[in-house]
Structure formats: C-alpha cells, structure tokens
Image 1 (cartoon, rainbow, N blue to C red):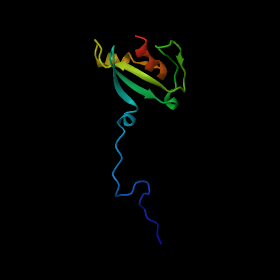
Image 2: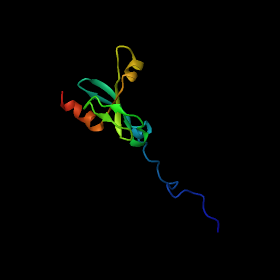
Image 3: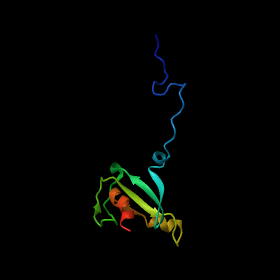
Image 4: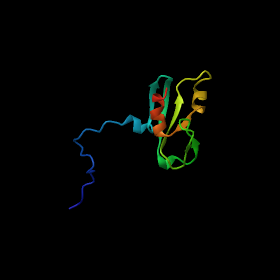
Length: 101
C-alpha cells in the first residue's frame, strides 16, 4: 500500500498556530522608558561575530554572546541617524538600566 504524502505535523483539520510577530521580526520590539521610545532587537549568540562595548557596564560584549541592540525611535537628525547611533548591550545591562535612573 502506498504511503500518504500528508504531513503528520499539522493535520489539515487543525487551525494554523498564531504568528509569533517578535520571532518573525528577528526579536525586534519597541520599548518605552523614561528617556523615550527605543527599538530593541535580540541578537542570538550564533549571529554575534564582533566585539562591542556595552554602554551599561563599559565591558565588552564578546563575539558569540547573545545580546541586544537598541536605538532611539526618534532623533533630531532623522531616522537614519537614530539607527546609526544604535548600541549593543548585554541583556542584563539593558534590563537594569531603568532602575539606575
């Protein structure tokens, strides 16, 4: 008897799962804090290939370390300038920055 070509992962009668928008955008989200709105994007360890200086602790974010990239949603010089001013943060430093102010 020939095998069926239907996928066993999701039977045809079931609903599609909800789209995980954050995952689809690569972990990008907007956060609001006392110093304005920020676009925050997760960088997985496998995609981290350079060394950066974390503005929170002034220590290195080493290659191969999962971390966050953040930039202001607005800038006096426009959106392109805001993106060019983005900074790479340790995840814990980004989370604790609001408590230091």
